Amino acid sequence: MNSSNPRVAAEEGVELSHVSKAFGGFVAVDVDELSIPRTGVTALIGPNGAGKTTLFDLLSGFTTPTTGTIRHGGRDVTTQSPDRRARAGLVRTFQLTRVFERLSVIDNMLIGTLPGTHLRLATSVFRPWHSAKRQRMVREHAMDLLENVGLVAVADLSAGGLSGGQKKLLELARALMCEPSMLLLDEPMAGVNPAVRERLIDLIRGLVATGVGVVFVEHDLPRVMALADRIVVLDRGKVIANGPPDLISADAAVIEAYLGGGGEWKKTSNP
Image (tube, rainbow, N blue to C red; front, side):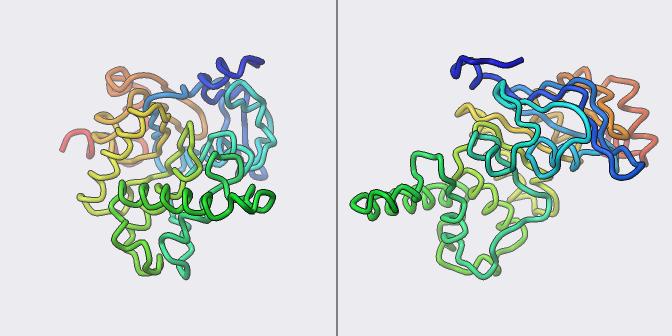
């Protein structure tokens, strides 16, 4: 579905049509049709090895599908690079944080500024009389985001000295510097303490309230059920269920996939 109307396109999310990704003879993802809305919270779940990270790589442009078409905002982005997708509003974080540890926290944020946003620094090269003002605007915006995630007190410290949870928060704040319309979070709550986990949940809810769509991978099923508006379930690279939490929790194919993958559903859904 291609839209020439920018207003309509802005309301469209991500669509996959006959998308597969093979590594040699192994097919990691094989999705017939999948539509992810631009608003609300969509959770991507599945047993270990189900293809979740590969699907995230496909959505964000870090890998190209073997077959099929990916659209974002009604436009074909199948072969677009990650930075072009980010400039169009599709921004991703990683399961293993990728902060610049030798730089300060605030410098990590400034690196997160991409050309194409209304705060971009790139235009200062061509409009030097705006340079100081624009740099001040960008820094103020970065500090506001750091305050929102609880890191403003460590803004001038080395990012390498942050805890694992703080690095997750920094990566989220840095992604928000790109002003995303859709945010892809790869296991944002993995390996963090309960306080950081609750802060991340509050931040996700706050983002959704402002109109940002969130897609996240998570293994904690009760938390998924409480947070997600829609759940996509992968098993062996295929979508076996797609719908609201109440329907997913009662889906026999989903229960079988989790029980067959080591009992994650039973262990996490019935504490």
